[in-house]
Image (cartoon, rainbow, N blue to C red):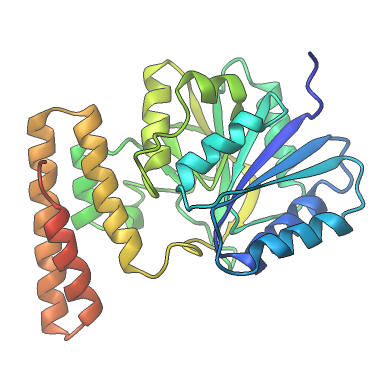
Length: 303
């Protein structure tokens, strides 16, 4: 049976009412002059703000024959990966664009990304766009796999600053991973790798997904011509939560994909980073640092 839509855009909403609506407006605006027929599948993870009402209101006022909005309301917050899996299952297109709710689409970025993917889909399986900060400066959003040297560089050598761990290239490049804030792929590829691992609640889920994709022989590319503003961290609840989730995610990722020796070395590095962060917090009298890295220390264990 022929699919109704050229593209399914998947968005996860959680307590980001204004940001989600701005994202939707930017999608509609980006594709206003496009011939693409597309749907937006929004999964709301039991938002406590006015998100659901605002989305329904936006949908009711929409006058565009090329787009359809499908809102799924969850009774509980099931996490980013699980909600994306849920959206992918009901998507009516062969092509999926996973887009964060805190994305602002610039110009015709979605159509550029889609057209490039379609033209190269025999060699490209997962494709990421170029993410920008609010001030339009490049946001590091792709990179090499999180091997022990890369984790070390990230924790202790300011790897992002030097472009060792995460970067934002200005040319088309094959990479090990792209940011989960913007990934275009075919539904069959997403399903073949099993979608997101639902044991990862938030952060590191795209690293795990694309690690499995590489194992399947799929190729991942970064496409800088399609540009998106990514506000970042809008539904993560402060600065401590992301750090702890990265700790959890790294440990889970290593338990799943690497040897016990590699996991042991990772745990040592994470403990050292936590100790340094805690001591700096004590020295500068920062409750945020001491509390965050005290919790990070407790998370850094083999089992």
